[in-house]
Image (cartoon, rainbow, N blue to C red; front, side, top):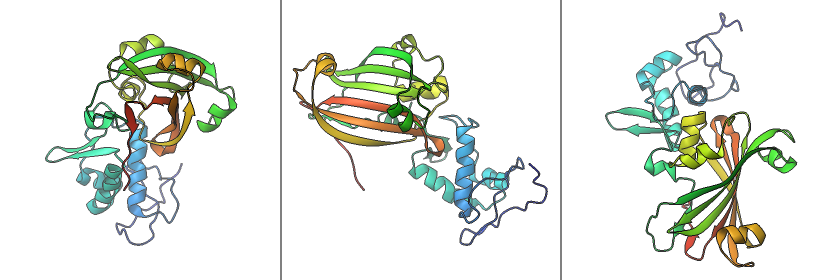
Length: 267
């Protein structure tokens, strides 16, 4: 692309701006009337997606980013404020701004909302029941923005708390980003699954949306969770996304709630 005639954007956040021209000379493909800080946010997201700064890494200072993108520090600060609010980066006083990672304790269980009724935090015991490559059904393909029969990795696992099976999860992952994922690798890793996806496959889940329903246990779910047929269960369907809202996981969980509850905070 020829960018020789392009000019740097205005440093004002209030008005309409010209497209951002990165230090590399590439023009950011954003709407012509996008606020400047949103354009900078998108540029930073692109660098995160491409792995320029990996989970746990410190990103350049606001001053350095301002020079890189040829905008004011205030514009960069506003972009980073939004990234921090989205839990994509973490500010640490006196140390800088770091790419958020699921390896950090306060983040690793951000998507797990099932809590014990006693309020005590108990570490989950995990068993990988199955991990195999399959062809995506029409339903799975639609939710993961794939084509029917595209390759996906199917994972089934059971989470137990104090020896009691409590969560049964069926997970579908796009085949290409997770090429090489095996039952042995999943079973041998003792950390959070999303942290494993970060370190081994360079995929970070940054947000998720869920759909919750009640159902009765039957067949295989009853057997794996150790309950009688007809036992009340909670089902949660979650789609998790990486940067730029790309769907990277479909997870259907079945939860026992006789000693646990689903907890969420609304604001």
